[in-house]
Length: 379
Ligand SMILES: *Cc1c(COP(=O)(O)O)cnc(C)c1O
Image (cartoon, rainbow, N blue to C red):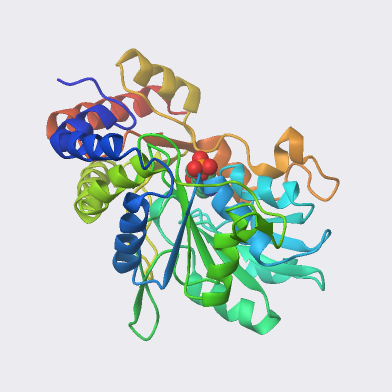
């Protein structure tokens, strides 16, 4: 059996190696490393795939969220509401820009932001909401957008984990994750569902004016060379990464299907177990399984993890500490117990290997061993 990894980039690369090598050779021969035609190509293909007017490539997903906030022209002290159960980047850039992150709890079944909690957190200083499409399925964007409209707020979708997911509105209309809010952000970090071989990211928007603003911000606030209209940053996707992404974009839906097949295998094995809750998919979104995350009940998680480690099966905890309990974000507004759902999840979730190259032998080995581990670790 092949060694089991959380994400098997090696094996995936083997499937596309000749195409990648060809593309790299072209870039190397052209020496158009920055802003070359490969970047424009990928941008246009991404726009077509997402059915969005503008894709603005940048250096990583964190930057994508940062430049989105910058494009809104917010003022110090303005409040931005997001979830406490996410990767740190979401709140980090809010704080870095001198804005105030306001954290809210998530729903226990989908792990996504609780829209009723957003509503309760809105004040006269609230300017934007950043829903995170955690682990590969969309937050409730219909309700988020309705709320945002009512209170005149911007919405930035953190779509770093759900690229390619489809959102279905009550009237049946479908839109790609990340194209529903004012702006959407993604990351092309290697282990993401659409990952390059270095760092990369992008912002999506249907708003022409914001797109123009964003293109300036990622380029030192510059529209005409050496004339700087605003304070910007240097945040670019390079040609080599763009060329690799173009190759993988063509396969993104197939990749999602592979992840969904692995998730279905897991679900079948664990659905009846009283110590395990399998991930639930909301009615309005499909799930592209950036992570496959279980909630354990009356089970010693550490014991499960060490048993799996003995069997050479990597498992991870996404995320062990919700943002409101992180040292850097210590805040008198939030104490232990402030967000019980997120705290319960942080203490009881476990993520299994999920990627495009899992075969049945590996899946069998993982499920058999996890069931044994849970039996041993039951309280
Ligand atoms: C990965 C990720 C980011 C940051 O992306 P980078 O490319 O690593 O900067 C932000 N938010 C979420 C939810 C992520 O998963």
